[in-house]
Image (cartoon, rainbow, N blue to C red; front, side, top):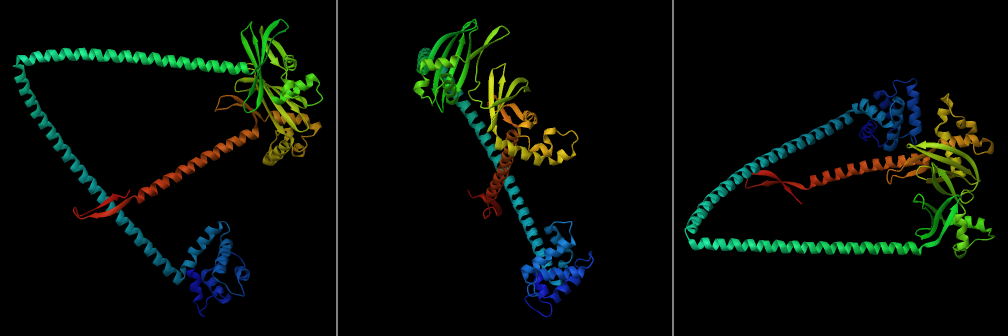
Length: 496
């Protein structure tokens, strides 16, 4: 702004800069001296930014930005402007005088702040020294007083004891008091111990009563939810089957199979849709079954017919067949995966709407399931192609399913093997660190969770920095510098 007003004061004086003053300024400042046809570029810049062949303050700023960008193209716009100003504009007489005046004011402010800081530090140090001296003197006086009182007390007690020992009646009283104190202590502690034993027995009785009541309530709830119980025989294995109904967040059925020969229990949880579709297929129902129809004994007996048995190392294992119940579509792939030191059996089902992934862990009989819709899969393929376009063009060992021409054709039926191979490589089985259970998810879901964790960590660091700054600013405002007339010195007072 000072440079603009300085140029305006050139002859003839005015409030705007015309082309003559602009040309004079460019010659003195040697603008665009490192470029060919510098005069032409300067004139064109003036034509672009002038209004009626005049420059106001805003247009002067914009044309300086333009000149700085052309003179220093390797720097950013802000840095180029700063370099241009300090190399040329600051040499103007009025601007130079203003800069020196501002520098002197800044130096004076800095020196005043330094002197104030020295004064505060010196006052604080003197205060600390005086306080430490007073504390030492006070503690020494207290110690001397304590020792003198102890000496006087010992002398007084010794004189009293000497007189009491000479009295025979006093000796008799001491013996009586000692025996009474011993008897009272024995009675007090014995009574306290008996009361403690009573309270302990009563507390144990109440806890046992609560546990028995909890077990009765739990048994009543389990018996109330029991819908079906029967003894079945598959091959040569006899087992007891029971079906329970649970109505929490969603209505589910729990099918338990108890094998008496091995004393093992196998549990299978079925949601409402699985039970309904299984019974509708088994009963050949033309319409939708009601709950009264599904809870009949004949209908529940159809669920037990889906139990299968496998002998693993001479031990019977029961399985519940879910075929044609939940997974709509065709089985397109079965594979064996190894993750976290465990083996999983992977099954893939494809329908016109989605692709379902199911895994089974033989050691713990754990079943995991996830799915991805066809629109989501299309967007995932497009995103993967956009992120890895340079890799596909430069890598010699690129996967065939990642060829740009075929990336959008993987959803077609003829390219299904490539799609299966691409998806299997991006299925992740991991152990959740929160609850320690395995979970099945896709690679993009794991990447999204990682990004969310990083963002959360950055936010926590930024909040911690802001809180520290706020604490510092509050601390600085809580102390006030005052002058103590009695001691003729400065001190700091806490205003809280």
